[in-house]
Image (cartoon, rainbow, N blue to C red; front, side):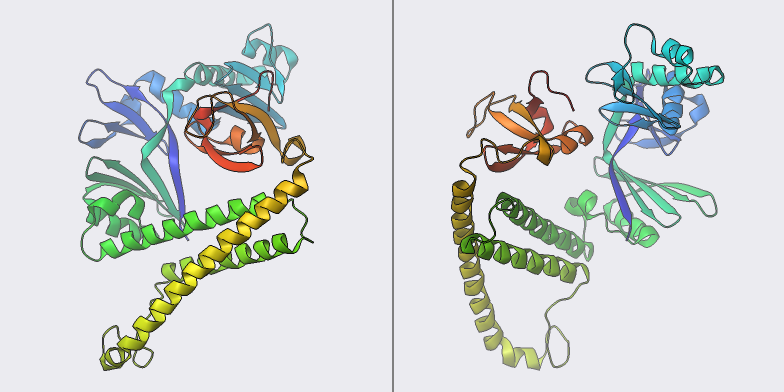
Length: 385
């Protein structure tokens, strides 16, 4: 299965003509208002070239810049605008002077230290490209960029070192990437596709809905995870949720494998067999709808009972999760319909440190699990991760 990377990090530099330099895998491109063209990296501004070099040598995210030097981790954190060696902050002197004076980095690597400092100073010029994706399958890489209704594909064959760049419409881009990598770029092209490709987009949307249902059920399972499984209601709810998750996962696999219901006699979608069985199929579908409704109501009832039991079991605990569970205290930056500004929350520490500013992070408000944008939460005063 192809590997898909979104939110690709790239340096950005705007020239006098208003065009923006970006870099994908070391290759420079110029992004205009309605077009994307190839650019020679050697003709790009020096500041941009240095940032591309830094991207190739260091690990860059929206939050930080990291250099792994042997067993030592050198890090710049954008939010605090500070340098760190492993987990210790560098104080009182320049970062480069400290590294050389302490002997952590040999003087012969002074140019690399300078590059790291330059990238840290210009960290705000690194951005996550929301209009681009990278699809990898074996030796093949395809970078797909969407600009308005146009698609631009940069294909790299690592085996024979052949590179191509094309401007395509939605249908052409869909077919080309599918041919090269076996991946359907329905999330980028769904609104612009025609003909048979629409079915792929519909399949993608069906899978997305089922994945949201699975995520909801897993959240509910998390609510009762710490409860006493010897309580019959909790045990039944846990079993029911697990079976429903399994059913939905199997349904997703069937959709991915294009397993559709057809004639049991001849396999055709429309035939005399199906015509004769139409009434029976309709009755079966109606029965399944009733059963599905009953099952949904049963799940909701079980979840309500289970949550009630969880409240009883955990009423002596001040917080459902704490530091031992990987959560740290924080507050809501902004109020909403349900919670006011400053509401105390418990934040998933790992999710908070690894997510981008626009990503969602798992939190608990009391015993309620929620997913909230990182922009809308903050750590408690004096709290560090």
